[in-house]
Image (cartoon, rainbow, N blue to C red; front, side):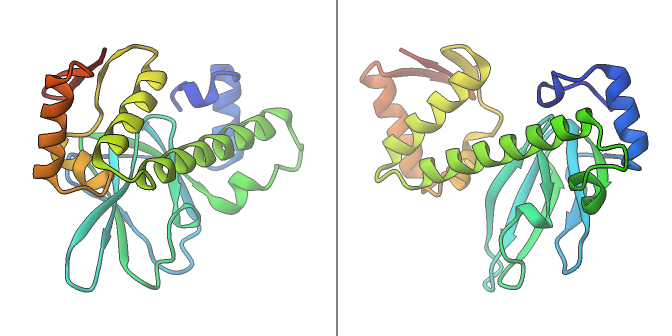
Amino acid sequence: MNHSALFNQLSDSELGELSACLCAEEKSYKKNDIITKYQENDNKAGIVRSGLAYLISINDNGETSILDYYESGNIFGQNFSPNTSINLYYIFAKKNTEVTFYSYDKLFNCCDNNCQKHKQMINHLIGCYVGRTQIHIDILTQRSIRAKLMTYFRYISRQQNNTTVSLPLSLSDLADYIAADRSAMMREIKKLNNENIITSKGNTISLL
């Protein structure tokens, strides 16, 4: 199991012990592979080791939406997704992606030894998930496309600790993620450039 920012308080040996304790199952996926479809009684949680994966929703009209995306250290699973009785949800690999799967029960119920490293892992996972959810809600509840973009850019800037950032999403996918019309979003990005609020070149954004 790779050492990621999510587990930076645990050593490699401790992570190895956790993987054995939790009966971890590691899988690799190629770009565009479907990683999982959410169905009832799905009792697995996945943690991305490397790559990028999207959570996609399909409504009754066959329209798709990007609800979330997962990078190294992010957790996903039915218990972290919307009510699957309404729409179809699935996760696919946007690029080559490696995932470690755990039984949800084993992951979120401390082992017989009640070990501290397991508690640390649970705290990391919950904190990461709650933080990401709050940020996405904050983005979606902004009243304008400009406010949505700037909220997202500032979040990525903090995450990468730099005022010049490389967006993990393509601009087309970003429009979907922030629930904005792509053409309208591109016009807003052009205005932000013209007003010297940002400079952008493809997926590279600099906050001025």
